[in-house]
Image (cartoon, rainbow, N blue to C red; front, side):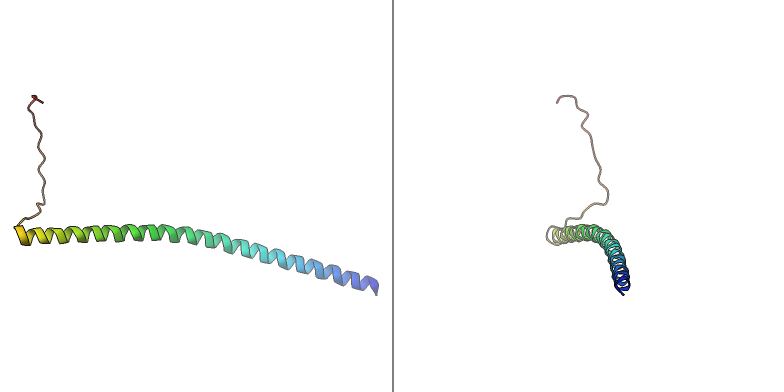
Length: 90
């Protein structure tokens, strides 16, 4: 009878430890997965912020372009000609 109790207790302890080990492995896997997703989320948030900033900047430039066109009849040229001074007197 005593041997049966000891055996059942030992089997119970082994089963509980095995179950806890399984849970720890599962939780560890889920945490690693969660960290990976958090890194991806941060990168996507950075990209989103960058695109919002670029869009806002572009909208500001369009607004300025429209104001200059309406008020002073100025037009932004599509081609910029650069020049170089060849005079050596400087």
